[in-house]
Image 1 (cartoon, rainbow, N blue to C red):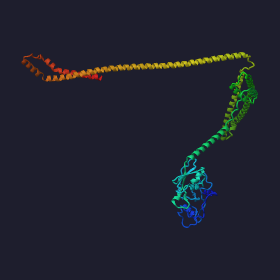
Image 2: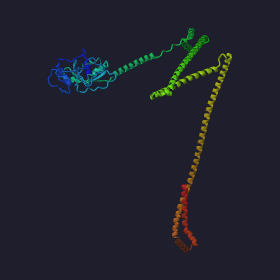
Image 3: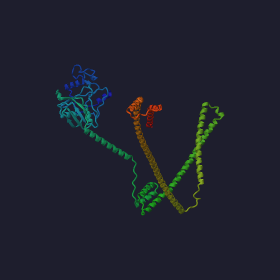
Image 4: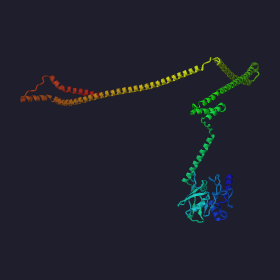
Length: 557
């Protein structure tokens, strides 16, 4: 709390700032009325109750103890609004201009709502202007915040103000909530409550994007410079071949310190194709100079091998001394483990001695195995040297014979390589032919399967045709049987009627025939004929039933 108060007290008004006139009692009364406290030189109770008034206010002095007034126009207000510690109230003062006066809002009211700040915002929206406020008045008020580049005023009591820098927008936002009065008029058209907020303008966003691109370019530039600084230096360019450069290169090849550099240049010349018949002698001399370093390298290798042998000997001697030291330590532990000495130690001492003895024996074992391994390697090297014959004992061999043997081996190698290539080609051809045969066999089997399926389909079609013919025949037979059945039923009905009236009909017909004098019907000779006539309808019915059963079986089949 005290730190915040000290920070606010440290903000001092600039000399060019327009401050409130102390002798103007009306202004002081208006300010105190807006703040809810009693003004200077006025008696009576405060205009609002004490809980709403600012704490730590002395009515007799008309000043707030421990707090200095804050003016949004004072110097020191930068891009961000001053941070106010929690619990500390901020008092805004009256701002007097030549043509208007700005009165702060009641501190008990909530702060005005402000939208999120657009990137690169330099333009503010000012609403709630008095109807009679001219552009000159608006410029006079907001020029205290910074340089104004443009003002776009509307007929509906609002305007847009664009500043030169971004931090000036924060000073203008601080004026939000002030009540503006033109002169000393009390007309509604000459008063209005200002509402200042961030505005989103295309020009601001375009400038912000340009700045971001500029920052990105600078960052890439600095990164490129850093990469160039950290990049290892590129090798020196290879000079072109000439007689003078060849002589210099021959001298460099003879120098041990410049040998590697000269070799890289020589290899580059070979790759470029600088060797011609005219320069062949120079290149041959350079190759000869490069070959002369092989003796030096062999002597260096021999020296290093000798140093390695001396180092091995020193390591072996040191290891042997270490091993003897461990053997002595183990001997001490063995002597201490004897019965006449062991009995005088305590139990804890015996335990520690036993542990130490085991550790010493393990370390001695490891070192002895390592030393034995070194000795075995030396013995194997010595045996290899014994088996190898010295060059002085080998018989002299003619170089021409060796060259002829080498040529013959090279020709044989070439012929074997060609044979191997021929065999490889034959194997690939055989694989291709085998693949073709397999594909042909697959196609043939597929064709056979297709033919078998086609034959099966044809057989099934023929069977279907035969079945259709049989079905038609059976349908015709069935129709005939139905006709016969209907005919038989008609006969049965007639026979039944005859059966009932058989004898009467026969007698009447016989009498009529005899009376008319015509030929008489043949009478029944015996009872058998009468029985046959009687049983004939039964036989016909049985025959009809059998035929119907047979027809049903045929239809089911």
